[in-house]
Each structure stands twice: as structure tokens, then as C-alpha cells.
Length: 213
Image (cartoon, rainbow, N blue to C red):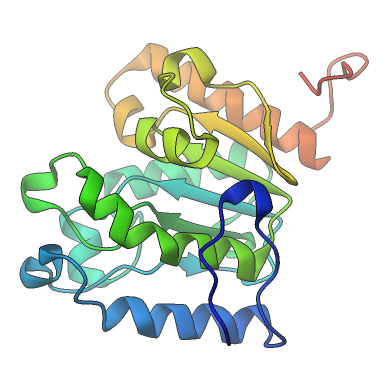
């Protein structure tokens, strides 16, 4: 496998290996990674987890305490809520692939730093290239700003389908931000219903608009 770190707008599939083989190779590289000092404090790296043939790839911010302990993304309270949200879209965790911008937990769950994002996101690019999903769901500010190459915040972008290269991108609030905020919960759940409609899992109410909304 030859890895090329392309911009998302020019991203293309990787090699002749199967998606499952490629994801396994990327996962091994992540677990061996020493490119930034986050590796020094981790219990486990968290490459990502899910279906290698997924139509949907969900991208969050970074592992938390539970993810660091288990080596899998979204396994704490936010993960439980994400499982519930996927149900609104007619999906299960077995049907999607879940990853983060950072593959190691930042100290005290602080925000990702620019140098950490720079070192870590080539792995994410290669995961996208291995899967080539139909839709990418960016959860929160950091994932949305990285994937869409924008400075706009999630509040102004959420729920509106975007295009970057050949990918359809749906920005949404991060599940962790909505657990204790009823207003955000209602908005986030509506956005996952919208995702289900885009996938054909949830019926449209009336005629589907041209922009999918």
C-alpha cells in the first residue's frame, strides 16, 4: 500500500487491498504512532471502528477517558447517545464507521491543538480513502472545520448538506454537547432523521426538496 496525503477535494481510493485490509493496516500504524507527545499519555490509541464497507462515516473530535481505556471510539455517555441517534436515521453501529480527528486522548479532554491535528489527520484521510463513504457526518466544530476547510462554526453549518470533492458532508452538533442541552438534542435528533431520509431509511414528509432538505 502506498499512502498519499491528499487534500480531501482530490482524494481517491487507496491501492488494491480490500477496505478491511487497508483499515487494519492504518489501525496498526496508528497504534504504533509516536509522531506527537499525545502518545506518551495514552493507554490505547483509538484508530476508529466499524464497517469497512459503510455508506456513512462519522467523524468526531478526539477520544475521551473511556475511549482511551477501551481503544474504541464513542463508548462513553456520548457513545450511548450516538447509538440512539443512529436509530433516528434507521442505522446501527454495525452499519457505519466511526473515527475522530485525533487518535489519542488529549490531556484533560482539552481541545485538539493545530500541531496534533497536522500530525494525526493523515490517518483520517487514509481511512476515508479506504472506505470512500457516500456520506460523511462531521460531529462538532473540529471535525467540520477540518473536513470542509472552513472557519465557520458548527452552529451556522449544522443540518445543511455540503459538498467537498465527491463527498456529501452533513455537519451536526457533537453528541457530547447535546447530552444535557435539550434544545441541541432536538436539533441533533432532527438532523439524524434528515440523514435517514437521505439514505432512504426514513420516509420524507411530502415531496423531497431538490437540496434534500
